[in-house]
Structures are given as structure tokens and as C-alpha cells.
Image 1 (cartoon, helix red, strand yellow):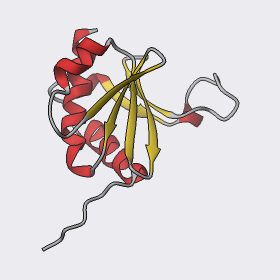
Image 2: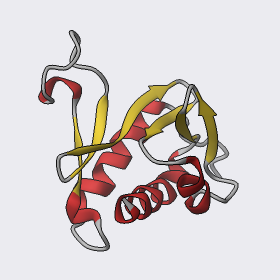
Image 3: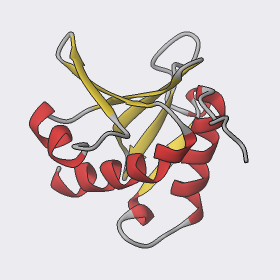
Length: 121
């Protein structure tokens, strides 16, 4: 039996991208992951990858060694309402809501959160 779990932010981001780009039902047809270099030149380095919601940035993606941090562009109460479980951690820093996806096992919950937040905007 395997006791290890995937916590590398880059791998989690790849799984999130595959979930979003691989389905076009349940609200996922309006979401896409756009790499920093493919976005409008708003930052010298292109900036982080983002989850795009029909032309609007829904969340930024920040891979870390301990998971993937989503900088969600929505109110804390909206995010908390959809992230209320043990798999996703929600923190508010500098007026931004950050959702940590700590393992690959939490990717589907993160996708559900993004779809729910997008449909409430």
C-alpha cells in the first residue's frame, strides 16, 4: 500500500489544469487555465498562471513545495461557504482570499470551489 501523497504544487497545478480543461460540463465550460506568458503583458515576467472565467481572472495559481495556493478573487464568505471541509485551507491575507490545495486528492474539491465561486459572480 502506498502511504505517500502528492504535495508538490507543480503537479497539483497540472492536475487542476487537466480537470478544468478536460471537462465542459457542470460550469467548467467557462473556466480555463492560462499560463502567465500567454496573458496580457501586465507584469514583466508574465505573472502567475490564472484560472480564467470568460475573460476575467477568477484565481491565481501559486505552486509551492507544500501544495498549490489559489489566490481567489471573491469575497471570503463566498469562498468559505464552498470550502468548508478538511481538504482545503482558507486564509485571508492583505484583503486576498487564499485557498491552499495541500494534496492531489483535494483537486476535485478545488475545482468544485472554483465553479461555485464563478457561478456566484
